[in-house]
Length: 69
Image (tube, rainbow, N blue to C red; front, side):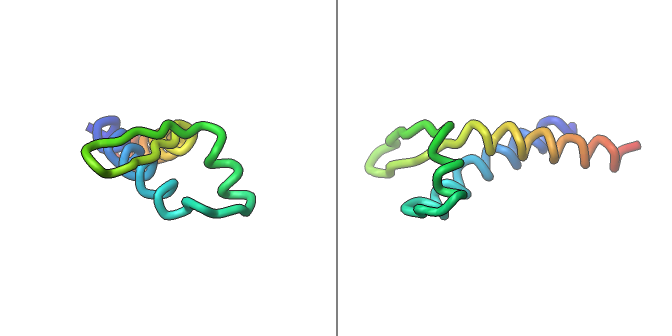
């Protein structure tokens, strides 16, 4: 069950953080621009960040797995 929760947390972070940092010209904006996928659902333009998804999912999974022990 920790993996499923970690994937959900990673998916939320991969959508929310790039949306919040859009238009940022700083170091974070440059880092987020490397692994993003742009797509449209209806009239909403969304941005998905693969690096954030991977990092948040692995970190959350490790914490949840350690908490279950």
